[in-house]
Length: 483
Ligand SMILES: Nc1ncnc2c1ncn2[C@@H]1O[C@H](COP(=O)(O)OP(=O)(O)O)[C@@H](O)[C@H]1O
Ligand SMILES: O=C(OP(=O)(O)O)[C@H](O)COP(=O)(O)O
Image 1 (cartoon, protein in one colour):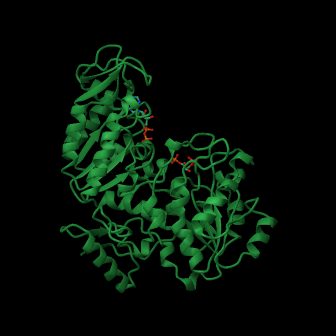
Image 2 (cartoon, protein in one colour):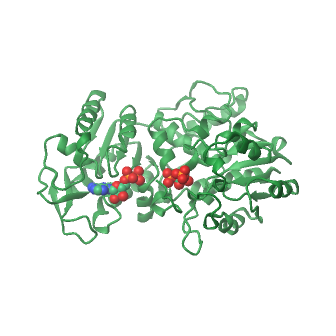
Image 3 (tube, helix red, strand yellow):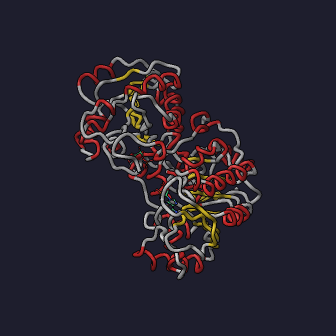
């Protein structure tokens, strides 16, 4: 989803304000009904030896959960930075891979600092425990050393948020970097240059990974947005650094996108939109195994309509996916999932912001017109269906929300989820354009979780394992607990 140049605003997840402000180890109860750092699955994946911690976690979860109690089955339980104490960290060099891939304007100003803020809790935890942080990230997709992709513009904001002066290296590895590392005081941060300036990074070159590892004593991966990449700084380096643990942001993303989705408070609804059914097949198939209700919107609905014999005018259709659409409808039925397609749509006479538009039933799209948004009846029926839920996950806009005229359905769904979040429903926004929509409406702060990774969250929702997560050390876990 990221562009070949600097990432676009819409390609980024735009708000994890609470991730930046809440220390997971001491998180308060959340409005969404679950305690932060206390979601099903991951949070009960505590060290079996530490029964006091187990009791503490269980009591927090009990206090925060519904009367159903929590059934927790530990999955993807990875050792966390929170498992490391001052005794483990004092004076230690810690290689922290973050995803600081933020959008910059032409004057190199940061236009959205969400990903920087999201990385702060882990770095603060490390420096407050006396560690020397060696911070690494990529920015954009440079081919070799490219000044406009330097991490230098990030230093002032990082320093401001951390409350210390971040030191910047002009390289990623090599003698100059080694010298800087050797003089780092405890509790300081050294930001390495863009790790993708070396082609060895994306090739996951073992020698390069070894060089990165040689800078540090242990490894923390907090780069959720890049965890689906098997690169030297996300995967290769773990072969040479022990322990290799998850940062707080990575852990929080897994808590929601794996934990809350695998063990949701029910009814559990998924809303899937976006342009094409082909790019969401994996996600739809995977969610059909887990959810009770599936609401579909966006450009993909026209392939479903056509598969049902309706005429769709000039709407976006993937002719080669008609059978697939039919089989997905059959699968929903077989699984007892209530699948809802919009009953009406907003159609346009051209694909343009100033197109003529009108609302028609989904079964009455005239020739030459294209559906670019869901209609008001659909918004009303989706909203009343969502009222019945306890967990909602959303991936993909309901229409061409980049054009104001066709942003109404997407914005209405964003507002509905904000409203539900305020009523205790767990609301999870799975990255990509749906995050941009939620930001646009100004309701990002009230959602239970907004993912910082578009591609990574999609892969997780498809049920795939992320190489950057798989490579981390396992926590000693309990298999299941009922509290
Ligand atoms: N009815 C539609 N016709 C054409 N494009 C659409 C329609 N509805 C939504 N889209 C487009 O889908 C794109 C987002 O799709 P996608 O990348 O799959 O979502 P996400 O980024 O959330 O994963 C947006 O650019 C939006 O304009
Ligand atoms: O912006 C990112 O991904 P996203 O656009 O899928 O959210 C990440 O920083 C990963 O970048 P990449 O897709 O160039 O590996």
